Image (cartoon, rainbow, N blue to C red; front, side, top):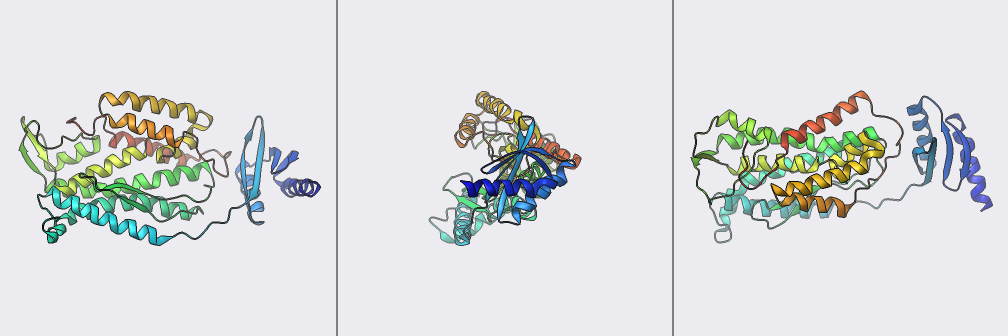
Length: 352
């Protein structure tokens, strides 16, 4: 105990140039961080990092708190798992893409290659989304894994998407915005040309009730469809080419990820923007999703998932420094992307 007190007292002295320490208790320093806040916080973090430790800086009542400890030792990532899942997702999406074009690779294996347009398109969009997260995270000093793809025998998609694991704390609220937005933004930008190409090969057909799956249309998908198929005549509908359907899925995934709650990409941004109001706002989002079940029963399921995974959010190392103007604009861009890609009724025939 005496040794621990000496260590805490020693850290209180070391941070003296950045913080007026009022109290030093095991693993915590409480006091007032000196202005300019951003540089003082950076100095405190660097001081602990040089000693193999990690420090979380936050507000405690009317004061500041530095919680510190030794950084966890991370095991090397098992990249063979990423590769196996990636190859399996290629197979499942090839199967789905071939069936979409009326082929049966289970009976005629070589017909599997008819699934290439859909498989390449959806993997490109999902992979770009996750690599956007990955490269921005690594650039900001965050330990992140390569993407894990999720192959499933779903007859419409062949996959449940992909994800990366963040294995270390994010340095600041601004970094949360950048990492959170990077994936949806890159995926959105890739989905734009993919969708345009797919719509070029989509065909106008007579609308027949009960045939096919009626898909809703986000604002951005409707705008893109007007490029090749403006002002469809009454009684007509658009039969999407598998590449266009991959683009539609890309926009849908973007909207899901940007929901501003929990551990989703939008939840990262909401944490950075809303501060102590974030949890109450998260419950509002959950309630709205439950009500949106009137349009699509999948929304209450997503509300349940958000609650099960938790509305709490891992805090960044620096929970004090406010967002810069650029970071605030990036957060606003995330909201714009959500508006452009969100569909109240993604399945069930809703149209703008």
